[in-house]
Image (tube, rainbow, N blue to C red; front, side, top):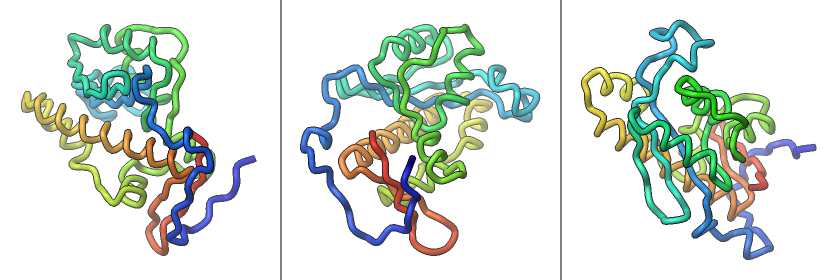
Length: 201
């Protein structure tokens, strides 16, 4: 049973095992995020995730220490990369990003996945936003939001979407590494100190 999250006391804990603190350098571990072409309202409601369409997908690979940008015409290449990964890391992948991709084709079972949002939701009993976790844990905020990405798609500014999505992937990567090294992350709340949530990534 997961330990109950507690308010953060300002102390950073470290793993006792040094190897657990290391990044999976050179391994087929990916950090992934995508942006969509449509909002839920435009697609027909919350049940219509597969109709949202992908505008841009970004993957960071620990295998080559590089970011890779995929556009809609390259969605098959993106799916092939994800489904052959050792591990895919992201925030809300299971019920959102993967479902958007399944709007193009069914790719079978989910690849091995660390969905940070789902992991934290199970411990907190609510769904934290990425911004609330990276703000508290890393002291850094998101550069824009999904509404801006939708507007940029209508304007044909895929370059701005790619830049924004890449920044989200970078933040998610740093959040993953922080949790891996320190065995916890922090989640901000409306009042009081951030909540310290123990993780085992």
